[in-house]
Amino acid sequence: MTPSILPPQFIPFNRPHLTGPELEYIRQAVAAGKLSGNGEFTHRCQQFFEQRYGVAKALLTTSGTDALEMAALLLNIQPGDEVIVPSYTFTSTANAFVLRGAHIIFADSGSDHPNLDWQQVAPLLTARTKAIVLVHYGGQPLIGLRELLALARLHNLWVVEDAAQAIEARYEGQQLGTFGHLAAFSFHETKNISAGEGGMLIINDPSFMARAEILWEKGTNRAAFSRGEAARYEWVDIGSSFLASELNAAYLWAQLQAIDTIQARRRHLWEYYAETLAPLAASGAFRLLPEITATQPNWHIFALLCKHEAERDALLAHLRERHILAVFHYLPLHKSPFYQSQHDGRTLSHAERYASTLIRLPLFHDLMPEEQNCIVKAIYDFYKVPFRG
Ligand SMILES: *Cc1c(COP(=O)(O)O)cnc(C)c1O
Image (cartoon, rainbow, N blue to C red; front, top):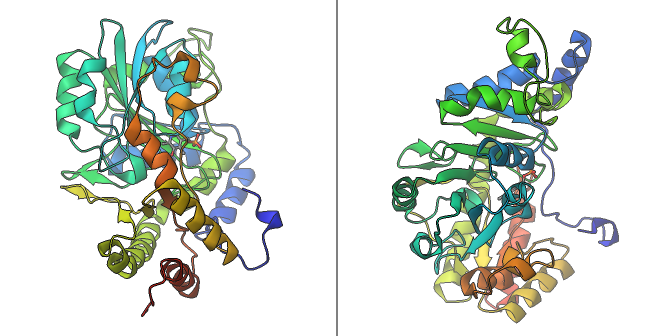
């Protein structure tokens, strides 16, 4: 992203939203005189997840990436272990496990949806497979979530949900991030709820609770000690500094309190795109991501799937000429400079297709109706269809 070279008044892909009390809460954190992690605002944010989603334990981290790294440590991933990861995802999904020496077995996306195709997972399992990482792309579960969870159970595999994009999304009434043994949310600036950088490790399997607190606090028993449960504060395991500062937690707490308003606003914006672009999609100009049965979406991404790469690139360039910053998404990880030599050579054609045809439209709280109208009109103009909006 190089917004500085764009003309003025361009419509960015994302703009951070202030709900109101963020700065006041940061002031309160400063006034309280405790800025390191695991303080009052951290507790509020963690309790928000524990209560709203009924999870065993939530730990605030400095990023979604950190939460995934904690998951890899908790699962005791060792060199040579195999972990199944979709290729069409952000690097952290795989990198967290590579840091522990895992060999990543990349799975392809489905024909209708960027999420991994669960039916292709069984042939990838070997005696060394330890875990499957599910990514809920755009806040949608994969088609066949129950089937994949059953397959994992049958083979005694750990399931980690990369729920970085999935806050508030549900499948069959159950919150995404509560299906796997462990899950990670992200509060990166571009996510629905933001702390600039931030994340949450969700522990659904209570057997991980005690060790997770230790890994979180640099391998010490500080959390238990501060509750009076340990006689001495000492080094008891490996770990790192995964916990976020109270400054981040204070900002995040303001966002979490406004979660219903934030979601309602995204829904409104998302539905405007869906309604106004439906005729173009019906005419075959592009496809939209399918709705997945029994899913409550969270309106994280509004994506178009273009016919081919040249058309996608032309549409992006056209939007940019109109001062609109729409963006493509992942380059598939099995073809990345870092990992392609370690990939087993299978062609993952669907992942490659999403990489070359998908466009994400600007979708953020403070996107103005005129701006959104302008985006839709620019898309109609590209396809040379009059827009009656
Ligand atoms: C944003 C994101 C991450 C990383 O989260 P950070 O908080 O930026 O570390 C990981 N996986 C997916 C699918 C994401 O969208």
